[in-house]
Length: 434
Ligand code: FCB
Image 1: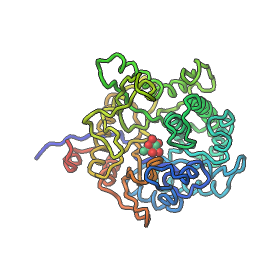
Image 2: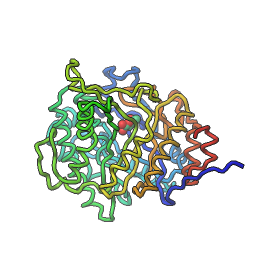
Image 3: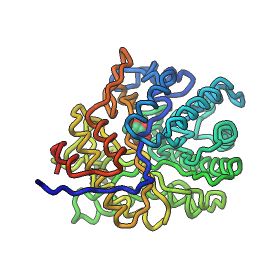
Image 4: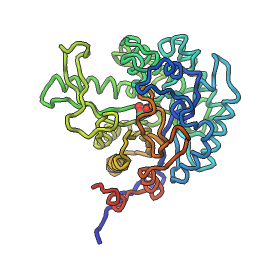
């Protein structure tokens, strides 16, 4: 009989999936994304509409996650439901999210709670959203309210999901609301996000004194020089890596905001406002220095020629996860993979993606890096922002006409890994991977 290796994960490891309110709940009609969708801005022409109707089906969806042996789930609270008008709290929404959290707990699914996942209440976006300094005060008040009303017993918190991606897509690429192309505005947004994160961090800790852990979910991409022998490509890759990957985390740890966001501004409230590191990881980009290419901002992002890519053209690069984890070691903090996933029409590819990334994560753990949990993106197919419903990331297929859920083979594979806390050689062989 063939001998097969086993990769064991720590016994208390968290296995789960991540999702966000607007992408799954349905009918979030009081936020800036809903408005944006109505203007026909989504690539496949869709609108989020009822999405996965998770707002009504959360209990059965969580029961399914439990059956899949998950022991955690990452979700977000929809700010526009909790505070539909400036300063007015919606009791019904609070009641709803209490029921959501109770349902998770009753099924043994530890919640990881996100406060901001890209969407803003309309009253906020109407007054300039994250570009205006008062957002810091509003976000602090919202964070405090959620901690007071819903926070009891919640250990893992995320203030803001992917602040740099948000600022980039909404204020530089202009493909997310408010659709601006204004670098200075993007830097203002990032500054406000840093300050808002700090205020929310302190607000949550002042309400919950039972040792909860607060962080943000950082989207990391690997940036490699297109041509390793070009000093220009290498320098550009280094600069982009700093601005995109390291800047925000460094500011939250050291309390200094670096250029291009601010000129080494010291913000004592920001210092040490990460209790753990949250990593969203999907892909890698190659960087080419292109100073003379019109509109290129000195560089061009290139997918490595011949690289395997997902449905959206993002390179599939599992080793990148190991590289990222290794870089976080210096912070000596617990790490959670707060998102990692693939959009694909080929479910076997999804299974392979999961195994390959978990193998890299296992390598990191074996090397002494303190990874405590993994959240696959996502439990269900859902509304993928500017791309609409076309890309499918789910472990479970959703038929959007009937809302019927069907667990995919990759979902069964992930369930087996979560249930047994290990990857066995049999699992690898069964799925035909090496
Ligand atoms: C991440 C987002 C998440 C989802 C995945 C595919 O950047 O946080 O909402 O869209 O990408």
